[in-house]
Length: 356
Image (cartoon, rainbow, N blue to C red; front, side, top):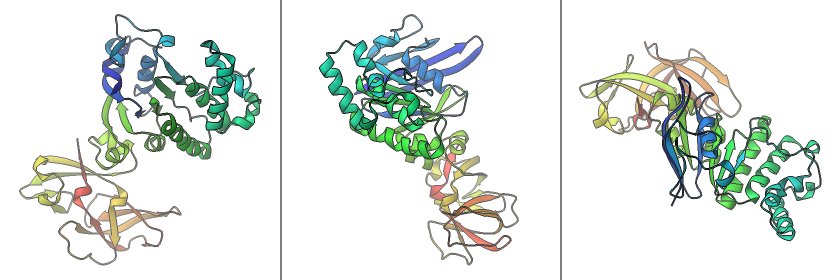
């Protein structure tokens, strides 16, 4: 069942178009991230969903009912949504328990029911032992848990999160990614999550919508988005990659001083003329001798031009023989090659994603 639908959603500020014809549908209980660089329109989109901004064009529907259009908009307080901001916005003069129960107080629930709900949600977010502390006595991660508890306890139809982990240090960010996903798996609230951090989006999301210059370039599950990006922007924004530009000539795709048979690619019928591919560094394997012949992979001679040891893996830069192309290769810690050492690159053309 579709919970939230954005149709041709557009927002302009004067002559500047911040969001340009966005279409997106979220199913009941789905977690979708809006991912992109600063200024791509993701927060503006979230604010329109929340009712804090009205669309210039297009509509927003929830459960089949129109809640936003240029002609009319349902006020934020009537949308049954909770929103968490970067600053958490928890009340400094209230204890943890009072902050969490505030939304229930506003809804005039009976005191006994409020106490029970607050107790339950504080147990879920592992903050019951800190219920009587004030925000100034909490760490950043603990404050974030309070904000999550306060947003979830009112059982909203939709949960909106605007870069909620940006104020935390690296270790806490990593911990809270998994915490947010754990809470989603427990409550199954339809969630829209805004972030510029691809790792956050990959860990938390059922699907990711990658935005660029006000538009959605691709919406997909994290694994599909990483393995099969459709555009150069998506391929470059989601992880590290190698871009290979070539040309289809007869039965081959010709690159810079090497070629690959057209039949070895995943969708050879779609390839013609000038073509571009994204190839992830971990999809290339290095050998000191030519690898055994295979119908699936191809082997290219080259040499190492740079290397860096990063503990969990080696990061190599390898140049195919006589080529100006430089390929990044990720190798396991025991796969040690010296700079200027001749190597053979083994790659599977089926893992080369055709991009536009």
